[in-house]
Length: 307
Image (cartoon, rainbow, N blue to C red; front, side, top):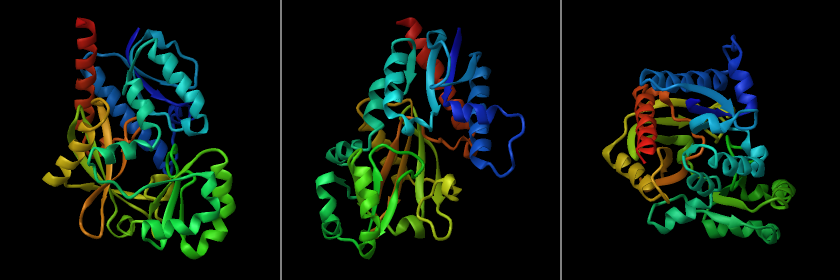
C-alpha cells in the first residue's frame, strides 16, 4: 500500500524519470521539481508517496488516494481518461473528486459560474450550424478579434485568435473542429498581452499565492509551451476575495484549485479559467503551498479513516 499517488501521464512520467533533463526543457524541469516538492512535503508528514501514470500499469486499489497532477495528455483521449476516472474512483479516493473532475473538464462550467454571479470573459457556444455565420460573432461580441477554442483542451491546444478580415482563412479549420465538438468563442482581451493573466493557487478553499503570466512578443497564449513567461504576483485583497469566491461557487469544495483571471478595460476582474483537474500550481513561487496541500491531503486521509 502507498498513501498518496501523484497521478501523471505515460509521456510525462517517462520524460521526468530521466536522470538528465536538458536545460532548455522547462516544462519537464518544472513538472519534476514541483511534483518532487509535494512528494517531499508528504513524506515529511510520514506519508508514503510515488508517481504513477493514469494511462500506465498500476494497481490503484493499493493507493490510499490518487491526486491528479500532470495528466496533460488526456485531451488526446478524453473518453479514455473519463473511463479511467470512473474506474479509479471505485478503487481509491480521487483528489479532486470524480464529480468535480467531470464538471471542470469541460469549459461549460464557465456558464454555471456566470449564473452564480461570477464575472467571466463574455463567452458563446459555437455549433456546426453556425459555420456560415462566423462573421456575426464579431457583432454579437462587439469586437474586431475573437478567440476560438475547444471546450475540452489544455495548453492552448487548437486555440486561435481570429480577426474579422481573417475569417475566410480559418473557416475550414473551424469547420473540421466543429465536426468533432462545439467550440467556445470569446472576444480577444487586449489586456492578456498588455498586462498579462493572473493565476491564483488555492488550497482547501484558501488562497496561498499568485503569479502573473505574460506571452512572448508576437504571441497571445501565455503557456510555457508557447514561450510564455511567469512572474511572482503580489495578490491584492480584492483579488484574493475574487479567487476564493470562485472556488466557493464550485459544485463542492476542491482540495486544490487554480483561478485564472484578467482585468478588462474598465479595470474589472474577470474569470478566464478555473482549473480543478490538473493545473500547474506554481509551487516554485511559494514552496509553503506544497506543505499546505500535503497537510490537506493528510487531513483528508485521516477523516476517511475515522469514518
